[in-house]
Length: 94
Image (cartoon, rainbow, N blue to C red; front, side):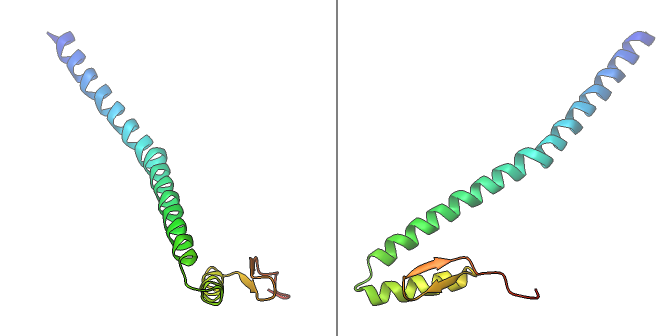
């Protein structure tokens, strides 16, 4: 009689430990990784849609204005002479 009770209690405790380990793995590795992957996919889709919309603009001046605005919003530096968006050089003192 005692062995059946201790066997049942051990099975319940073992199941609870497995449940806790599974939940910890999900919370620490699987779910954050999936969220980041989803964010990257969403950014890529938005970037593709933005690029397509810029390409559909009527003239080059409109395209340059939109590209300049996007560049500045992303914290980068837009070079008017070349039309390129580059990383900002480090500021002295900070």
